[in-house]
Image 1 (tube, rainbow, N blue to C red):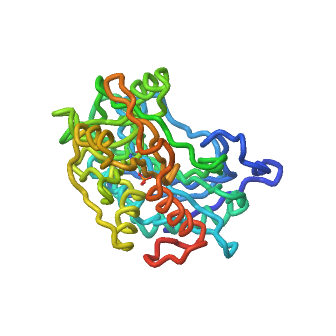
Image 2: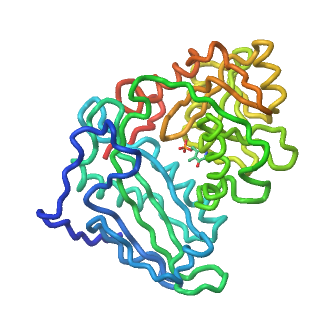
Length: 356
Ligand SMILES: *Cc1c(COP(=O)(O)O)cnc(C)c1O
């Protein structure tokens, strides 16, 4: 792929924030972006790196009406050696292709877009922050751009990648979150788009999150849409339970987002010789386990927070404390090792780091 380069002029270059403490997640962007376009019959074309800035879209652009789109989220880190690295980036572009298949979007060439991302990161390398726990969040997106409001598969698309420096998720150390089982709403249904990283899933979830926040909880625990018994995810993270020293996570049924952090926790747990189960797990089993002490830890897993311990689980107006309400040893161990690999402090036995 030939990438045309238009650099931001020296007067227009921005200065990366001196510190990211106090900077709200995803509100600051680097100097450049990568873009390419798709047209039926022509495929991907016009690949370019250009100054970060507004898109030119007509109001009739299909994505604005019917949400035919996909996005991804991954991070670039400044590692111990001073080099920059991505964490398992091919997995994100492979997942984007699975989302694309479901959403009728064109497929990407994983190696080509990874190469484009690396070129963008090299150009904006001054935006990879160095403070403890910080990273450069990478947001690839595909949008349906045909100018027509009849519902059909678009014949035109735009792919772009933008970069946003982000601070540590836990500036003052781990803060276990309080979560609430959603009884009123569901996130995804079998045969639907729950496994896809596509905008509609998040549009559909924000009311539940808003109501949970109004009740003093930070995240929603989603149950399956059919029986309203099986646990699916927490907010936009996958969920793990420590039950009688086994690591248990809901199996992927099509309505759960297959997280790369989830996959990494499973692989790391097995590598350590822990017993890891992917199976269906009911809310009743968890509540009973919290009462009899067999469920000792609950934690979320996702790119943004890596590991997010749960302190309280609320169900039907009743709060259930998880363990002593603090971060448990299993969550801590996964957090330390995953971030250790991501920042190049630990050996990387699986080859998860991709140097830029
Ligand atoms: C992105 C996402 C996750 C976590 O996936 P990672 O690849 O680990 O970041 C989990 N659930 C939902 C709904 C998501 O959108």
